[in-house]
Amino acid sequence: MNVVVEDVGPAKALIGISRAAAGCGVSERALRYYEEIRLISPSGKTPGGMRRYSEADLARVRRIRELQSLLGLNLDEIRAVLEADDRTASIREEYQATDIGSARRRELLLEILALRQALAATVDAKLAGLGEFRADLGASTARVEELLGIEGQRGGRPDGSLRK
Image 1 (cartoon, rainbow, N blue to C red):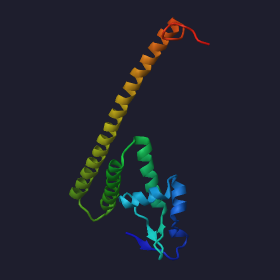
Image 2: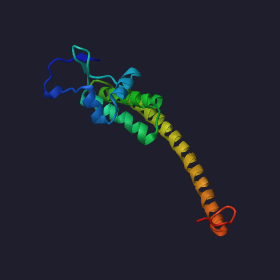
Image 3: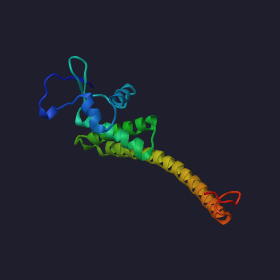
Image 4: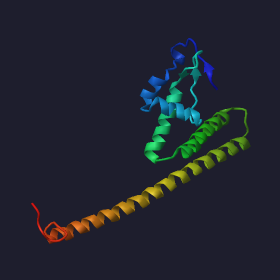
């Protein structure tokens, strides 16, 4: 939900796109793109339509960057993680409500469990891919080391000659 922000106090301090981008280590273009593909939504806009970001918005952008750089997730995978995070937060609020019964609390816990298991499967798939890449890298490194050993025996050149 976007709100039009005209005059905000320190408790609701929203910042412009330039400061938001700089604070998150991304470009303004990246923020606009994340909004276009619905990964983020600025918390407010000025009467003139300028985007304004809250600390929660910036935390979400940092989460996106972390998922990209740490796990190598693509934007579709990141969307799924963020949707699971959002749903988990919603479930947490409902779970903490005092007026729900134990059966509903159990349903909510089962839903969170399914969300976490789906995320674990995504991470496991990425780890398997990284493991394969690392194994290939190890094999090619060993081959280069083997060739270096052969080259050392030949005097440093494939034909056995030395060039200075």
